[in-house]
Image (spheres, rainbow, N blue to C red):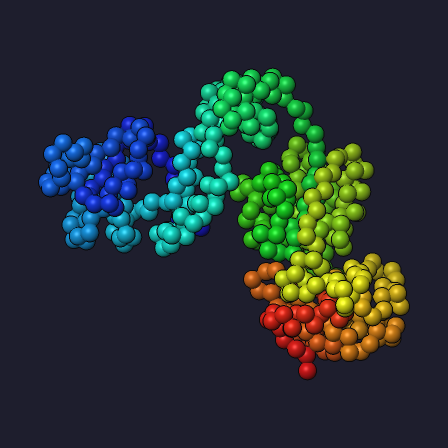
Length: 453
């Protein structure tokens, strides 16, 4: 985090603006309708009768000021007033002069009782405004009514629900249900009755575990339901396939428990992971088991669901974009194509110790795409098994390493060179193998690639 946005109560707060042009006027407009104690010093040349003060401020004028905004084109004069304001104990913002400023003004979305700020530390204010416009479009105009209603009943809620966790869950239910909709629509009395009804009939907490698919890695590929589950979670149990960019979307104070696993190196055994989920849920925590891709596609989600259900705990499954779909799309590879692939099979090259591997004889037909998970370590076996079963040695293949992530790498070649390609390019997991005629699209569509010799 490069900047910290603080929420400063405005009622009665002394705010001073210094300047006679549009820059100062823009800062003054920020406080229109606020309860701040605003003074605007615009110099001796302003018209008679103007509400601005027709002189420059003295040290006495700045005494007690909390925030001082300076909008002057004369840098030396601006720097002088900045020194004067700091000496009086104020925080200073000099318009378009980040080097002279103690803070920067964020792009603000003002919904009365709800104010949202977007900041870039002063380095890209236009970008901040662009983000603001996108966020603002998603927010209802009546959001302030909901905030004011929450303020009205806040003391009642605290008295009725002294337990913090119970109280938070009440607010989450209230802000997502009918009460919120009624408040936003302006039906405040009905909204208040609905909130009090919820308060007088609190829902009994039921232990539950959310099995959440994180997708292939790009946080923007999270589903809305997955994002909501992350932001509601008290505890997030995750492995190495859940990238930091996805975990960053979770609630900041959620406890994160790493149970990372690599092939042949299980830091936490599967039964212990299940026991951990059960224990956390029984403790009254909202548990998210975050898994890369989709929980039910080679992610042991079925095993975890079975264990948690056997303990009498509800399981809510939130599907995710599985690697085959997300990585192939990121590489520009259509997994099916009317001319080149009429079938798609998702295969894992990794099985339980002692269990039989894939039946390559049923998977070796032409015009049939194979998306092979966990195939890096067994690339030689995949290659040999498919060719022995009749798949043509010249069949195109693609390897997508870290698909959809910033460090994505795409390699293309032929089936008879698959093992050599993995070894030569030092491919590491997570990586998806695509076998089939459609793999040529990674090259033909201009996607970054490396071709095996």
